[in-house]
Image 1 (cartoon, rainbow, N blue to C red):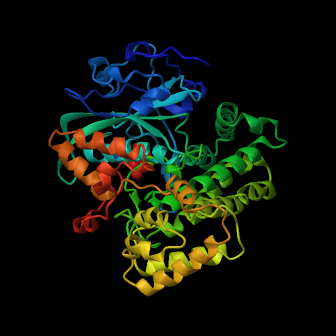
Image 2 (image 1 turned 180 degrees about the vertical axis):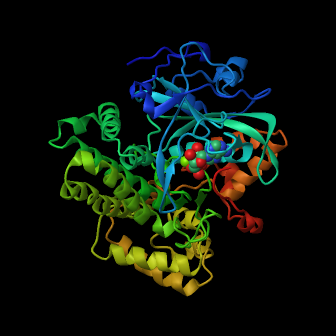
Image 3 (image 1 turned 90 degrees about the vertical axis):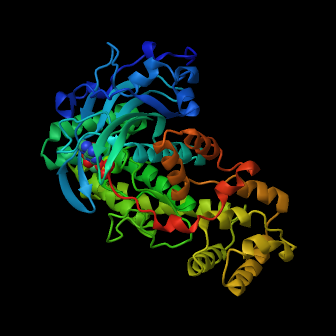
Length: 493
Ligand code: AMP
Ligand code: MG
């Protein structure tokens, strides 16, 4: 399909396929306008997906449209209802408390929904103000685009607009609206909602919608609903393997934040691993560490069970439901093994590779070695020149432990046919140099809070190409400063 180039906001070819669902699924409503909105940042690569001309970004039309201040006649905005398990406990009805769906537009990869996050209260706001503050909006924007740059399934972010209008958090803060893009924002919790409310017809309507629009191949299966659960389970397992491989922590893996498409969804108190600690908790609110780094795969599987429970009345039998869910572990394990093999620069598989990986993680953990820097520098290792290891070895306090591991690694490399140069290129293509560390986001946020958005734009440009060397930005790949460990991020803001 060829699309017209340079679509303008005013001629958005917008439709509403989600609104084909029965009325019980959503409430039509208008976003609440914000006073004097301005552009904070926008992503040209996200815009390219929907054939949008970046020259539009600074127009009043664009800014008003993606703040929710101007709604074209063809657009019928809505907020969707869903429920979910939060921190392992059934939380009942939640829903789009501050997100408003404009509709879907054609994109280079099929239709994409456009959603305004922070565009004002909805019937699902549960006493909240329906707003998002500038700081959390910049974090969501940057991380969405950073994850896309890393090749990890994610919702996208088109832009953030801001306003000097204040909302109350711990202190008054200025508000912002993030325009998110995804083929769908349907969550596991959207299914749980109808299951828990004993509405089998609506549950079926939702499953049929998701199959017809997003998983058409499931329709020809003997049990389309089991096939749906299988596909969602597999995509979720693969998504989490990608998280683990780059040290990404989501922070709030509640079932209402789990995408039915296996996309990373709802960026809040996320983090990237600095010094390696599998028990690291990135969300200050998560005192029990339910969503700690090492627990993410297990929690994702638990979430798939919650979805399976909701789909059980449609699937028919516990056996078929469990068979679908049983895909999680083998898919996760094989994806993780493949990602780790690539991170270590191993093109072949040898029987002792698991032991090599396990011993590596043990020394990384013992020394709290920086996760990103370690793998990036490992790519520079020269097989026959241990004397060139200094930058890598310097990451370890316990040098002897590193030396022992490096000797084993070098022996392992003897079984590889690729030379140093070829291996380095392959490793640098999977081990990012740049990730969105909290302190980098923090610097950009503080500048933005004083009206200077240049650092957000710079970070976006760097993080869109996280595997490229970009030597002029070496300091963005450095160890976090001491103050970074004091940063706290918590749930919804
Ligand atoms: P989150 O932790 O951001 O995934 O949000 C959990 C639930 O709370 C979702 O239903 C959100 O829509 C809702 N929520 C979060 N913040 C607000 C807010 N400021 N106003 C209204 N609803 C909110
Ligand atoms: Mg959420």
